[in-house]
Length: 103
Image 1: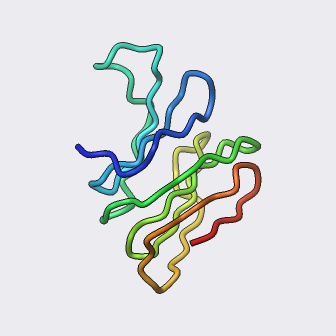
Image 2 (image 1 turned 135 degrees about the vertical axis):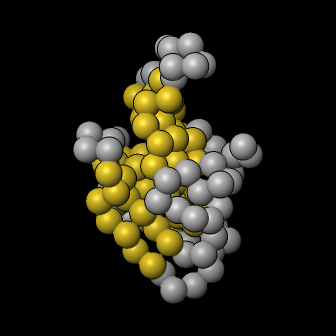
């Protein structure tokens, strides 16, 4: 699996990875490799460009190359919002404390 995102730190021991296959994975670096996967969101069918975590409410925001933006809640382990921008994107940035993004 190739990484298409930089890891984003949610908490000191949790890291969020966006994968080229379109999955967002949360891992716990305290655990051995065979047990470190906390949760995997497979809601994207295309490569991810970028993503971030919102520290205030433990939300993950990720954007794909086809313009889909998804919000995920770590507490409920589900997608909470889906936005289709209607255009392909090549750059994506998320504010670290509020749910604003730019593309």
